[in-house]
Length: 44
Image 1: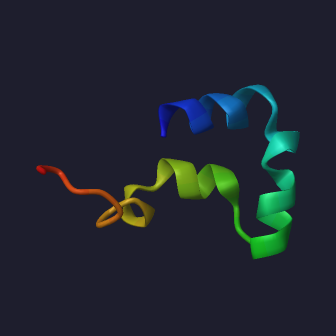
Image 2: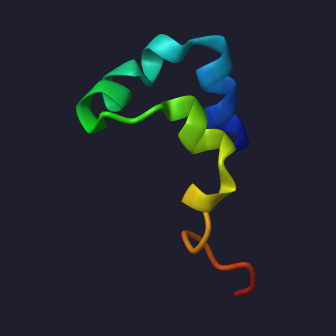
């Protein structure tokens, strides 16, 4: 997650095709924790 945030901050054009295809705001998706809840186990 941190690495994707770095990419978005440094070169947002890299993720722009994803944003356009899925019609989403990448920055919002990366910063808002509600989108990340349940996508990974906190304990394994």
